[in-house]
Each structure stands twice: as C-alpha cells, then as structure tokens.
Image (cartoon, rainbow, N blue to C red):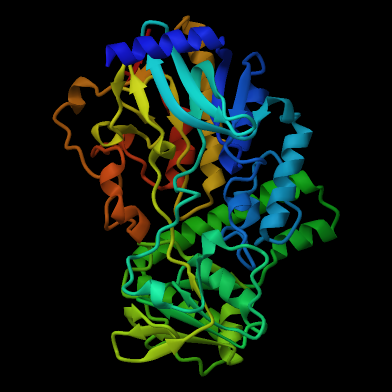
Amino acid sequence: MLDKVADRAQTIAANDAMHVDVLIAGAGISGIGSAVHLKDQCPDKSFLILDSKETFGGTWETHKYPGVRSDSDLYTFGYRFKPWIGPPIAAADEILKYMGEVIEENDLNPHIRYGHTITHCSFSRDTNLWTVEAISKADGKTLHFTCNFLWMCQGYYNHNDPYIPDWTDREKFKGLFIHAMKWTPDIDVTGKKVIVIGSGATAATVIPAMAGKASHVTMLQRSPTYFFCSPNQNELADRLRQIGIDEPTVHRVVRQQIMYDQQALTQRCIDEPEVVTEELKELIRLYAGPDFQFEPHFTPKYRIWQQRLAFVPDGDIFQAVARGEVSVVTDHIDRFTEKGILLKSGEELEADIIVAATGFKLSVLGDIPFEVDGQPVDWADTVTYRGMMFTGVPNMAWVFGYFRASWTLRVDMMGDFVCRLLKHMAGKGAERVEVQLRPEDHNMPKLPWIEEENFNPSYLMRDLHKMPKRGDKPEWRHNQDYWQEKDDFPKINLDGAEFAYR
C-alpha cells in the first residue's frame, strides 16, 4: 500500500498537479449551486468544477426520454438566489436553460472542466491536501489536481448503468427493449404498442408523453404509487405578478408558501394518512372523472410517507387512462416472449417497444476509490455527520439532498454551511477539519443510513449496505427533514466536540 502511495506521489510530481482551494465534483444542479455559494460567500477561495460529461446539467443532461420533467416544483427546486419565472413543473430543456443562465450570470465557465472523469481521490494528513486523479476525454491523459477541500456534488446514482431486473428470457423479445435512462431521441413510438415497466415518477412522465402517439401504452407495475395531481401553475405567483411584484420577491414568497404547504402535507401524511389518501383520490377524479376506479391499480400497499409522492401536473397520466390511450396492469413478470411479456397470471402482453422505468443503481460518492493516508475508505465503515461529512474522512462534504422535498433546498443550505466552515477554519488557522465521535457517542449504535420505516424506495434498499452508517442522535444522521434542518444548520457550533481541527 505504501509503495502505491509513493508511486502515485512521484507521478503527481512529474505531472505538476494543478492546485485550487476547493474542488467541486460535478456540474449538475448540486455542483453549480455550490459553486455560486462559494464564489459569493468565499470570494478569496480558488476553485474548479470537474464533470465527466461534455456539458453541465447532470441528471437533466442524462435523461432524454419523452416528456422528461421535474417531479418537484421549480420554486423550491430552483436556487434561492435566482428567481424561477416559468411553470412550477418544468421540462428538462427549461431547467437546463435556467442552469445555463446561472453559469453565465455568475461567470462560472472559466472554472469548469468538462470531459474530466474522476478516477481516484486521496487525502494526506501530512500535507492536509486532497489529490484527485481524473482522465481527460479529449486526449485520454490522466491529470492530477490538489485541493484543500473536496466538495462532492456528483449525485447519488449511476448515470451510465441503470437498474434492470434479471428478467427471464429478455433476449427472446423481438421488439425494442430499452431502459428509460438509455432513451435516444431517434426512437419513434408513433403507431407502436408500448409497455412501460414501472410506476414511479419516470413512468408517470414518459407514459403521458407517449399517449396519443403510440397506438396504445400499457403501464405494467408490481405495485401502485401515490400520485399528487394539480394544475401546473401557482396561483399566488400569478397573482403577485399581476399586481406588479418584482420577480425576486415573487420567488421568495412563493418558495416560502410552497415549503410551508409541503411541511403541512408531510405532517398530515404521518398524522392522518387515510384522510390524505382520500384527498389524493379526489384530485385524481378531477382529471379522470368521478367514476374512476382505484382498485386494484391505484391503491398502494405502503404507507403514504414511506416513498416520494409523485407529482402529476394537470393529472396528465390519468387523463390518458380515462381516454383509453393508456391501460394499467398490476402483476409480476414471469418471463419475456418473442411478442412481449408473459405475466405470472398467465396473461401475455404484446408490444413493439418495452421501456424499463425501473429506476437506477445507487452510487456512493460516485463509486470513486477514496483513500486517506494510503488506506482505502469503505463508506459503510464511516458514520455520517448530518448526512454530509464522514468520520475518518477530513476536508470533504457530500451533497445529499431530500427525498420528500426538493433536492436543491439542501444544496443552498449546505452551501451556507460549507462556506461558514471554510471561513471558520481560516479564522482558526486550521488546515484540516474532520468529524469525530464525541466521548458520549462511542457506545452509540451504528445503524443503516436511513430507517426503512422512514423511507424505503427499492433503489435505496438494494444497496443500503454500501452507505455510511447513522447514529441515534441528531448530529449523526441525515434526518430527511428540511423543516427541522433549516433551523438547526445555522445553529451548528463549529467549535463543538464533534469537529477536530489541525
């Protein structure tokens, strides 16, 4: 191990590693937002953003399937520092346009290196520096960067390798089989029989976009999902604009209103789930008709707060079902056939195109090999500090957002925290900070990243063993509660016993 470290050090010296104060991994929604906060709050810090893609956008650049759109409102999914002036639910190209404006307005382009895939990260307590290896797609060369602080903003799933269950005889299907993440714009569904496997946000997006073009679309699901139907508009925003309120104020007020409403809804899902479920059904009936039947295809088996509530603008998928353009089948796949899919019930569904909307594979810190002082980091052996820092791993933060609220809310909040931490280190003359268990924490149980009772989507449950551990105290878990964290984060005592400085 020490020989490998020495060899790497010699290679880096020979290549004259570029140094910055802060290196940000990822030019998606997290990385771009974090960079703006860093530039604004710590203008003295030099920084770079590395991204493996040829452009910015992350998730919104990866997905090309029909109708791709946000499943959170853009007043809270957008950044707090840039007003959103479009509809609450936005298409991918609208989100990319918004992000491009953020990059341009904050002069981030000189700081971004596209086509750079990070392949290794190592920290030395001797130098208090991270060394980051990256391969340049332009020429295939391995480049080296050093930084004082590493800000991981690369997301939490594998953009190149989606999750596809091991279905029997899939290769026998004579039509086109494709995962939604691998969709290309040249695929034409016009006049085709399409099966979409899945019932989550991706399925709820792609199905109404295909309905009316395809001869018929079938949503094949193992179990139903909860949906929230609402017009794709915000009455408060429209009214404020009508009376001449400026856009920054509209954004701030509407953002606050939505967060207040979301908190109330989340609490009601816990306190009175049956009532909320009936209210969601009534919203669906507004679009699908008063006689719409929920059994058996739209009655989920899990409790309403255990998975993300899928937002359906204008109830579009239910309108398509009501028009007869979409049918829903709840069953299990026995095997694939030449013509389509044979179900456990014995029914065969025929298709020209089968789309797997079956989710993704969890990626912990980009699946990048990490080392600290020459020793490999196993994230499952670490304990998380509030879901963003990790025991035994100095000078690093990972942006991991919210499941029930917009991801970007935590991007903004962590931007404040990391910048405050960097300024605190400078004030102390410290070159290193790492989180550590306090004396009262050493007998604390080491538990899975999140309680299954709290949140249990399949992608997380499949690979939960790869994630860092949590404790049973607020400091040592990501509680997934924005409304609590927005009050707690500004009060974090950076001189608390959980922070060790050198």
